Image 1: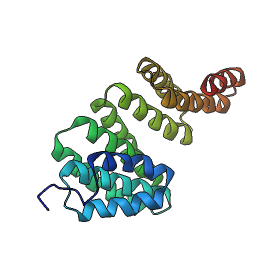
Image 2: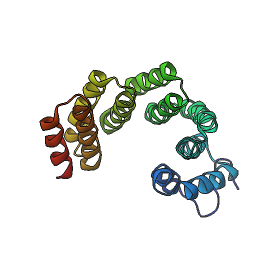
Image 3: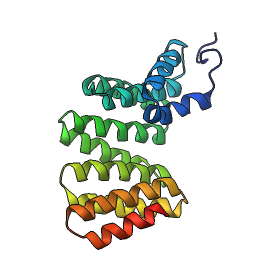
Length: 191
């Protein structure tokens, strides 16, 4: 197999789909990520595979292993010189670091991701940071992120992530006692 070639039967699209699979079918995603990594992937492909593995490990309870995989994914992403790739990994790493009790490091990763991201990816990273800020009880900052995320995602015509951002903002409104605003956001997300 040539340098940078994927495992037989695996395409670049399959590698990109690993990130979706990590959330919907985590065990399949982890197995596929390991196949990709055994197939001598290029830096981009290896970064995506390690990010998917890191997300699965983080979300299935092995947070420290998830952080290690995501740090490797970040190193590889930086070597690709693709700011969007780096920003996406930083968003995943930020969540993992916060789950690992490293709140300052996690928020710094999110800050850097937002500096690097644009368009839809920026909206998605803002949403992810908003969720973490809501979990941390930092409601004012979470509302700011969700407001920005909704604006960016609506402009980009991304209905799925707009609905997620509206739902997140609704949760923050509930947390601060603004039930009418929360209800409006939940209804808008449902549409």
